Length: 479
Image 1 (cartoon, rainbow, N blue to C red):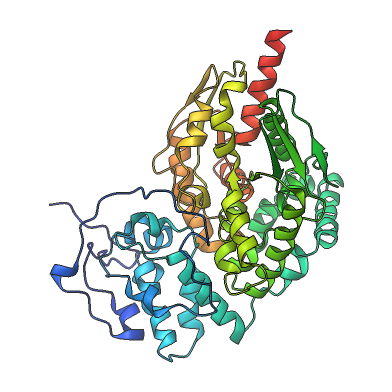
Image 2: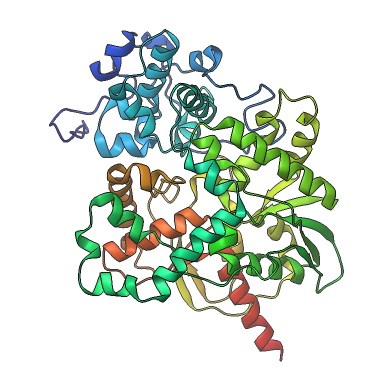
């Protein structure tokens, strides 16, 4: 018989379907379901969700968890081993099942004390539990609704809307980061060892400062014309962090689309997608940003909206649900959600129009949580990478397990973030890659930080960068 793992306290992890640990049961006193109600569901992959009206259907996202959503959980425990925070802690309260108990406790009138809410704060919202769940519990909606309820009682991280909702403020913030790097202060802190002696939260924040890269060449809007017979006209989301720190990724994405015969429109009035606001419980801020983007892309008259950031794409496919209770915006939000596509979804059907050149590189691919679990997109990025001559794709163990970035989680919960990252780094190192490829800015920053921590001098690339490098190599061959 397989031995059960023990947690840091020496206690055994509960088997699937085992009774809920007292740590969660204290809040609710809820018994585990009878044996006949338990499930032995084994599939780790759920089909893609219908983006219309959001990934969970047409009901609006409300500032409290819905009872019918909570009741879908049969407490079978299939989510436990899929949950990164449960795996690093062994605690029921750090699992989806335990957190659902806590959500119900809040609805039942239990006080939102710090020793209860801390477990909700520690949720990565990676939605790996949704992939594992046999009952299709809409956990992503539950955690966002619960955080919205707590946000109404006691606002947290109010600087989110202040910073990310205003491009000029974000630009100034990144300007300061650029000055920090260009002045040589960052090199000095690392050379003298001061950076490694900073408190954990500051040390991690410093380690996550993005390398200053070129701004998006079409930052103020415009159109990138197709370089082949025109096949489509699409919009490109520039976002906030992507626009300020990963402009070269946008340039690569636009160049690839142009090569494939796609006209790329960059609406100048677009803003941050609002994902960070929604994840943090600021639904009002998320809705304001969503309305602005709906208007901006409606005016652009495009057939699709291409997103090269997994978290942004997952959230925009959620706009229909976010604005479902707003009669003026609901239909337009649903239309935008239907049109939103990840870059890999658009490129793969057009891959025959792209001429990839050799790129001798051994890479491993990290699935962004909000691409694999939230959007069900796993095959497309890998299929594109396998089209590159000379590139060797080596799969890491559990490539779709969270790296610990989760928006700003690595800043608000640095201890748990690093523990989750340590698991990911062990899997990355085992593949002996020459580069790591992913498709989300937060993952890129987190993975770079993790590789530096383990002393592995390996670059982290966005999928678009690798594909465009190969396409440029193809150009050289044809000259």
